[in-house]
Every structure is written in structure tokens, then in C-alpha cells.
Image 1 (tube, helix red, strand yellow):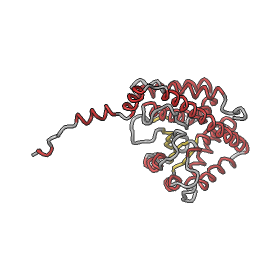
Image 2 (cartoon, one colour):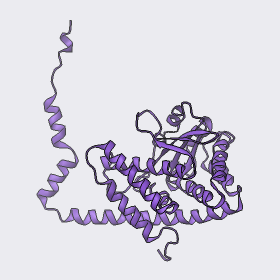
Image 3 (cartoon, one colour):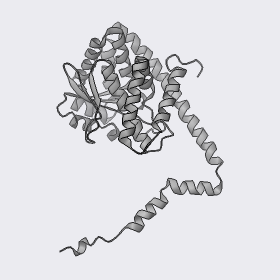
Length: 307
């Protein structure tokens, strides 16, 4: 980049690299790994405060390219984003917890003095361009509200549909707030500058806004309403908003550099493989041995003879 980043500092990049490495330390016991992450992140935030949360929010929406699709690392990374989300709500004075008991539920449960909601955090690889509406789980989030009044899905802003999508229509129909990590960063900084009470009031205003937006598939119509709510709430927030916009531009550039560096290293590694090493790797990647074993184990189950 022509200019040095102003918001995504070398320390921010180092934090990102540290957590990518920590998440990769898979023990084989997912619940234990998730608990370890939650404890370590909570300790980090106690030590470094809002600066740590801002670093996470500005970078965590992008899945590392080095994590294989649907791998244990990818699943633990998803849990990491939920943990960071819950910690942010705790930071502005809300009672927040990561839900661990069931799979047919939102990932974060939050209780404020006058309202409550469930939330889910999303992360996507930069190399994945085509995203299905089901990836955002808007309708599922509505059903997972249960006794809670509101629901929120937090996504990296640059990975959301920017023209039209059914997710915006689903959100306005079902009172589900589609939110971004950038907007949450603004909220955290609003709590810093204006106090937690005003930050929570702004969050509630965003939730209440969704039901007033005309049902539409238009991304511009949806985000114009959300952005206007933030930018007109307070002069101080308008300034913070512009700074987080610049941080978003920087975060995408740095994420691109991170992803491209990994893919370049992979290209180099692959070109150095011997013929036999390449064949062995391809067989493993396609699961040939595993799939063959399952086919070999298939047996007639005698149901046709059941009397």
C-alpha cells in the first residue's frame, strides 16, 4: 500500500497472526479447545481493553485461507468469532454468553436492562465470492429468538450482497438485524466516548429500525437506513464512523495480502513436490482411501427379510 495503515497497525496484524496460530492448536476435543479460547480471549481483553476488541472486529470476519474447508480449525474459528462477539457485548455492560448446550440455536445470548436478543457471527474466506442466502441464516435466526425479542447476524461488510438479496427482505420481514463488525466497532468506541448507556441506546435504536424499513431486497435501502441511524445519533459517532470506514478499507487490503501470501507459499510448496508426493497428496485430499473403506464395509442389512 502507498500509505502506512493508520488503524490496522503492525500490533493488530501480530494479534491476528497469534490467534490464527492459537486456533490451529487442535486437541481433538472441540469443547475443551473452545473453552481454552474463551478463557484466553477474556484474559487478553482484560489486559488490553477495547484496543484488543477493535483489533479482533477489524480482522475476524475473514477466514484464514490456510484452514481447510469444513475442518476442525474452521469450526473453531467460527467459535472464536462468537466469543469475540460475546466479549464485546460484555464490554458495553450487557449480560452475554456463548451458547454451548444445543446446535439448533443461535450462538450468543444477550440480555440488556430493557431488551434481549440472540446473535450469530459470520466469517468468510476472501477467495469465496458466491455466497448463498442460507449462509447468513436469517430465517433460522428468527426461529431461534425463542423468548428473546430481537436477533442479530454480524458479518464482514465487504462480504455482504451489495445490490439485491433475499437476506434483506428476510431481515425486514422477521425483525432480524443484519449488522457488521465495522458497525460494532463504532458501537464499542461510542461506549468509550459517550458512555455505555448511550451505546446500548444506539444498539436498541438499530434493532427497532429494522421493523420500520420497507420490505425490500435492496442492499442500498437497507444499509442507508442503518448507516443514517448511526451517523445522525451523535456528532462524535459521525466522526468515529468515518474512521471505521477507513479501518475497513485497510483491513481488506491487509487480508488480501495475508491470503495471497499463503497461496503463493502453497504454490511454491506444490511445485517442489516429487511426482509420488503429488500423487499421495491428491489421493489424501480426495479421500480415496477413506471412501474406499466405507464402500468395502457396506453390507446387506436384511431388512428385506424382516417379518
